[in-house]
Image (spheres, rainbow, N blue to C red):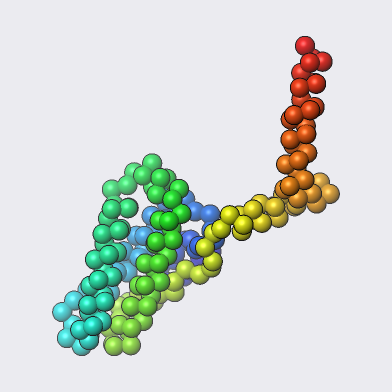
Length: 171
């Protein structure tokens, strides 16, 4: 699922398969937009103080998480980051918080070119949704529309009963 954002694109959403590079690219996209908007907020007397406070809080939380999670990461670091779905979920939360703040700032006359935000959409992954997707894929690939459960039963029977007998005959 791709969400277009002005001049940039988020690569992943909550239901998507993603790599460490995808996650890192989305983080860099958000980081660039945070910097663009921060340049417009900093020292702007037209922004209400409570909105500046909310912005500064968001920015400090974002920067802390971004730098500790992504900056200086190697290929293996990116892979390890991607293996933790919590990192993807946290990034999407930051994307959505940024979209809310950018909207509030735009309502107060503060905007920056390239910061036209639409947050990631979709529902978070669950084991049930993963199994359903896997079962649907199995039904397409297996003969006679057998589901994943039927395939696993057949595979177990072949592995447990048939293969040992074939091995005995071959010996």
